[in-house]
Image (cartoon, rainbow, N blue to C red; front, side, top):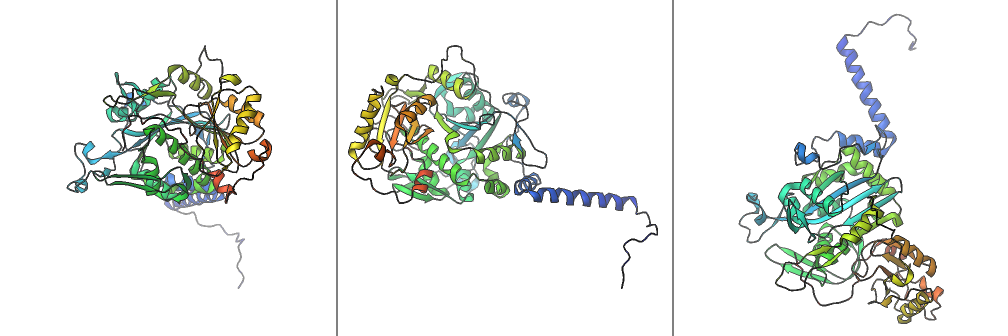
Length: 489
């Protein structure tokens, strides 16, 4: 049988509703076809069709004014991209049943205080992320939750801001603390959601810097982690993040947070992860609240996935501990001068008196930590640095994780000082993060690449898996002063 597809006889005119139906059919097929070209665009389409919004709190008009209202991304059906620098405030909450007036019935009469899915309590974690597309940088500024500052006109800890007035109150407190840094959007996530997120990403391989054991039967909080590199599931990652039972309390915990963030970014923030964003969001939707749109969220995730390791810079609000008198409330006392220098360099806030972050060699405080097991290596490095004018140096406790590559950790954000030392040494990599010795400007964590350059005659222990070692940025490597007053939760 022959089928004539060029039938010249006129076709009957379809009714209007059939024409409309065909238009919608072709429009739908067209959208699906375009989306299928890119897995990321397909992810965007799938998430946009989700019926459950990510925002759980309705901002009043006054609260909305706290955040910059301008657009931050563009993209239509293609992958959305950032169009300008963006500052995102991350608030992590840990709320116990006793913290709220009307806890859910499922949390009652359990014999302990469970963590509940609430976003309205104290902020256990505060983090300001700056996504800078012009310079291809991602800045993560950790804000100690015990930072003393003004919240709603009262001098107190900054972690109270969310409990007092929600994300807008927290954003205003952070902006005021940092000298007027603008906040574009916020994300609040419950600690339960963090565990779910890590599980949804397939876990994370990282380095646990010490044995961690802590037990609190009143909260059913049980921490039991062994020292060493390991693959953590969501519950284990929470144990690492929540442990505060050491001499640096919340500051040590912030260092472990930065270590875990870098490990997560390097292992999971890849184009394939962006494509899985709908499934990931579905897992944690009930534990998250944000005024980001789906398109903006994908633009931010896509940017982070393409950011080079060296351009992920992790900082901490500079300051010092308050009095060690156990009877007093402990605070992190922010340093206004150092904050001014930090936000001028990293957040583009003009400061007339800011002269840059460079320090002359004798002024740079350098801590040396050996990871190779060669006791003479730190002394050889100290001597080499001294010949180039770096006289303010000291040998710190060894770092227990064997490293293939030396890390020059810019502890206080002095990027130019780190690059100058890298040039002097001729080996290693510069990382801007707050995971080194708190008393230093620069912490040099010596790896095996230092041995031939400094002429060590003894070979170092082999690193079994250099790639895995380099992907996990270690946390707390601090001296051991007398214990400081910090709550453990």
